[in-house]
Each structure stands twice: as C-alpha cells, then as structure tokens.
Amino acid sequence: MQRLDAGENLFLLDVREEHEYEIANIGGHLIPLPELSSRVNELDTSQEIIAFCKMGTRSAKAVQLLRQAGFSKVLNLTGGIHAWSDRVDPKVRKY
Image 1 (cartoon, one colour):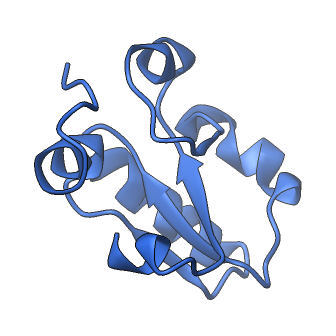
Image 2 (tube, one colour; image 1 turned 60 degrees about the vertical axis):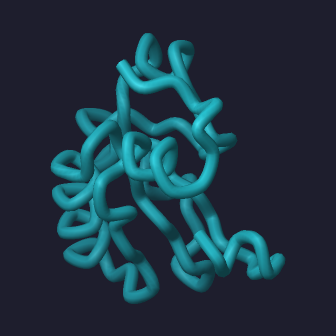
C-alpha cells in the first residue's frame, strides 16, 4: 500500500466477481478468479502484480495460479479489500 503511494508501477488485479467490484473497488483490473486461467494472457509477466479479493483467500489462489503460469512478481494483498478499507481508505465500502 505504501508502494502505491510512492508511485511504484504496480498492477492491481481484482479477482472478485463483477457484482462485488460494483459494490467497492480500488481501481484494480477486474478478472474474476474463475476466468483467470483463460485470461492470463491479458497480464504482463514483467510487471509486479498485486492480487486482491474481499478477504484474501481467492487472491491467494490467484497468486498460486499465476506463479504456476510463470509469473514471478506476484503478491497477495493480505486481508483483501477489507484490509484496504481498514488501513488505507475507510471510504472503501465493506460488504
């Protein structure tokens, strides 16, 4: 989160469902987890990717999937969008 504030070139990957994205989002690129394996070509292996979801479980699975697909610079946003709301921007709605 501090790295985003510092202007680092990080790619936020939102692996929630579209209806969740409509409730609350932090500007990430939406690829729901069930679609990720078929849409992995939309991502750049050279860019650092921060995957997130509501609480961190689906994004942990996304990190594992991406690493198996050859991505080395991929991290999970621990606690997901709820943690973001608690630590970064309380205006981001929890649901």
